[in-house]
Amino acid sequence: MQQRTEIETIYRNDDVLVVYKPGNIPSAPLTCAGDEFCLVNEVRKTEPGIMNASGILIREGGLIHRLDTPTSGLVLFALNQRSYDNLITQQKKDLIIKQYRAVFTSRKGAPEGFIPYTGYDVASSCGYISSYFRSFGPRGAQVRPLTNPKAKNCSGVLYTTQTEVESSNSVLCTITRGFRHQIRVHMAWAGYPLAGDTLYGGDEADVFGLEAVSLTFANPSDGQVLTITL
Image (cartoon, rainbow, N blue to C red):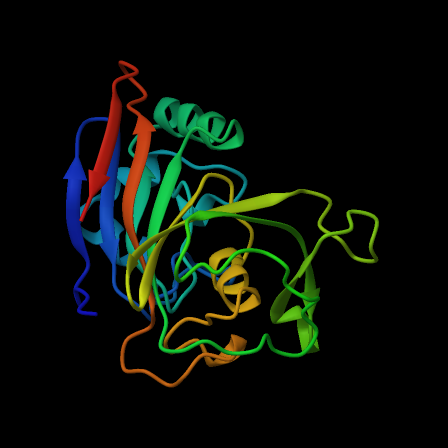
């Protein structure tokens, strides 16, 4: 699995910007100062327009969604407030579709704290994995799936990952709304932790096995449906 190693502009118009985030770069500033190394701060050097829009956290500018730090792939920005508001509304209505390539090395049992998995074999069949989530471990650094919405510390929202077999060691995972570590947890729960994802039982690997490869959304100014792919 080869991935780009530089931040690149993949698509741009007057409303939106789609860039490629290499792995091991935070998507947004994690501190109130907002001046640390991250995708937002690197992109704004050449595309200052991403700071023309913002939500609750001004330091994130027009960032519409995030990728986990080790995850690489496509990230969407708005270039003005009108576009930002429109895209956030689309996201809340599950109208922004995100597809990821998930790469694994072998089948394994789920790590500690996972409830039993009773679904299909994601490596040989296509289908849907759905669950609620809860934080797990010291400082809630990990996530665990739940099937009971009334369970203690349950997120209260059902999240679904659609999987499609791509090769003998990869599947394409499609989501709309997303929870922290959603695909990583659903894959580990199904017995196929991602390559390099040692947090959830995956084998050591030079390249982290999750890459956002496609984004579908309506262009804010004219409603045209855009699909941006790698």
